[in-house]
Amino acid sequence: MKRLFLAFLFSGGGLFAQQIAVFGEKDFYVVDSSPASPRLKDGDQVAFLDSYRTEIASKAPFEEAMELVSPPAWGKTVSASTRGRIQFHPSFPRGFSCHLTLENLLPGHDYILTLNGNPARAGNDLLLTPVPSNEQERYYDFLIVRTDSSGRYDTGLGVYLRPGAYDVRCYVKDTSDFKIVLYRDFFKFTVR
Image (cartoon, one colour):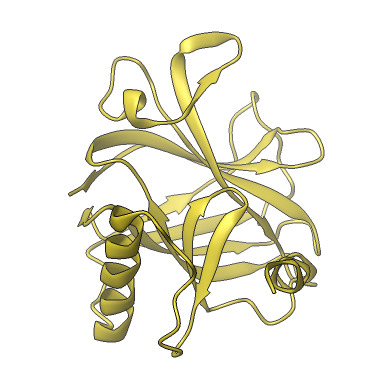
């Protein structure tokens, strides 16, 4: 079943505007109206999924929004019209709840969604992986997504995270060369 879903996700077929609960880069679940849950064993993950389902059902508006833009010279520009937007709750139980829209990227192409910290800011120690050239700085590649035939990706995301305050960057990286194509410098949220 998971293999079939992975093929569906990476083909870009019909996934857009759905809700995805993310537990890791290759560990995610499409949340639909079915009461069935994935076979989660960790109590915190189950509680997060329950909170995320409740939030989806309530259709509560997001309190915060921010634009993703093409990076300066250290990144890579796909086109002058490439852009993104994240709407999110500044506080959420056991994770980060948002709606992500990406536009005018390469069609049918894979991108990595990343949270990137800084040792001098909150949340850096809560992220999983040290940056190879700077081990004090940490990041979390939390999901690989594929754009549709027009270079768009549009979905709701619930990302399971460690509790704490976060002041991190958001990156969209090209899987072919790992260069950043969209980013948002530091923004804050809290995982309760």
